[in-house]
Length: 222
Image (tube, helix red, strand yellow):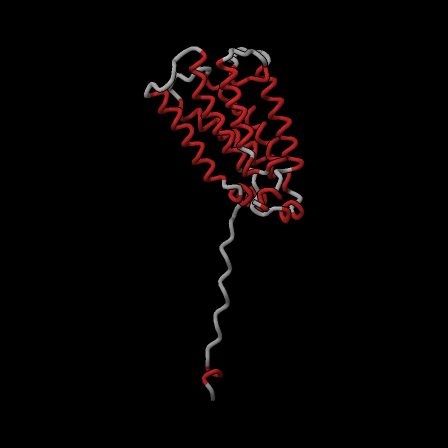
């Protein structure tokens, strides 16, 4: 009798632990994680913390046009974080294999935008933010819409460039006291044209991104 004949049979491999959540929830969670959602939430918290520090330590003007300068930069930074999460690490393979992808894109974009507004608002609660939550939410929505549209051309990893460029343009418009609705970040909360303009840009960007998704080829080739 050989040693091979008396060797005890190996134990069957252990089954991987299963997530008790419904498959749809698990799919949404995995999609969100693949887009670096946890890192994005941390970056949004940093944006909110920097804005809160600026408000608490008197780095900003309290009133007037110049009181909007730094908050606009933070809002643009938050929008830039959001649009970077549109990048797919799987490229064309994911685009052609998943029929749920448009719904996942829509849900992730809405969830991240809501989290951005909520996190910044939480960070500045109790502080005197020029224009309040309404101006901040309007600016984040509009600039995020620009980033979503940009991601269709540049890919998610480069989609932050156009939103930050628009914020630089808005800073110039602020200094020049422009009143056009399409310069919504510089407009006061009561401006009747700023909200429709920002929401229209966000809606168009969201619909286009949901249907088409961020461009993958540029990101992959780079």
